[in-house]
Amino acid sequence: MRAVKRLVAFLVSCIAVTAFAAGMSEVAFTDTFVQQAKTAIPDMEITVVGPLQLTTKARDGTVGTLFLTNAYTQYTTNPDVLQTIIGNQIAALKNTYVEIDTQSSSSIFAVIKPADYVSNVAAQRAKAGVSQEINLVVESLNEDLRVLYVLDTESSMQMLTKEGMSKAGLKESKLRAVAVKNLRKYFSERPVQIAKLEETGKATIYQVLLDENYEASILLIDDYWNKASFDVAGDIVAFVPARNVVIVTGSEDQEGLRLASHVARNGYDELGYAISPHGYRRTATGWVRFTP
Image (tube, rainbow, N blue to C red; front, side, top):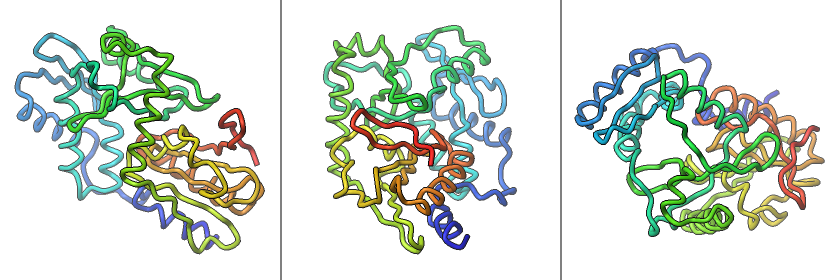
């Protein structure tokens, strides 16, 4: 049990503390965001649908939805950076309707999302009264995970739609290769850190560290998935409870699997941008859900 507590403590900056009770409510957080957003973007109409749920209308009439759930989760995890969180959301909102062009392909990255991500977005938009369909570019990684694409610039990160891809002259069949090439460059320039966790007893567990945004995308880069990077017992098993948490152990490491599963479940339940509580075995044909 001591090893579990130490491992959870290691990731405490990522996992919301259940004892946290003080701070803004969802309503207060929403109101604070709206007040600042209206000041920063005076030509955009922003309407509160409910706690953490907004609709927006740009100057050209384009209607959108904005959900502050992940931002609020980040705030409850670290309330001291409230202004940074709100500032990042406003910066992204300012650039929501920026169109991609043929020069933007170097800014396209692949991200991992849960299988129900698209249906959840559609349901949220319908609840907000937005009938305009959003055609995201989606590929299946396995039964639980989906690959989506984003355009990540210095000022914003937005999901890539089929319409946007078509306007930029990009072919869907080549999108994965372009996005993974960009990820390889991005990871090499940071660079990514693969840290072996200490004080885990006989278990061997690694954590992937990058930038709090693209850690989970490492599942798409073949270069890292070998025993040189992850010296584990048996096949490599990766857990991706959230976009910024990747934990790796071996299929024959029973203690490692127990600890990693515990942290993954906590992370999936508590973190913003949650992905999956399960582990995935690396095979010759891809990532397969692993049940110890």
